[in-house]
Image 1: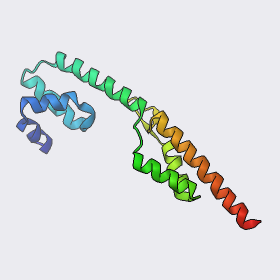
Image 2: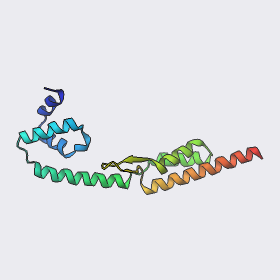
Image 3: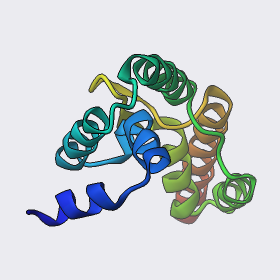
Image 4: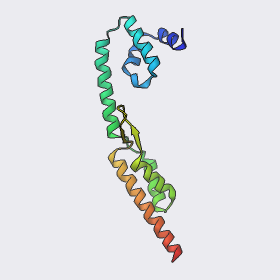
Length: 139
């Protein structure tokens, strides 16, 4: 008996239901064993499948909307951009163009539109001020 099998067998019905409903949080091998244990314990899968599908749909929509950037890092990025620092440019680029894969394997933006807009502004300010500082040193 594998370690996963022992762990799954020791779970309560509620814990198994939680594992089944939150499938994205678990390894496929563990999930398969948990699903087999749910069937073995005669827990009705049909109602759990609909709950799981609803949760995955909500998770997918939340991923597509994107995360709100941390206000502290946004402010720090703007300050660094206005100071002409490369840090502001890097933070701005990160906020504006970072991507991740959704559950379907498609690339989507990590941050929401508002945060991406702030990132583009940071990047623009940082590049502009850095360029002006180089021109000031050359002239």
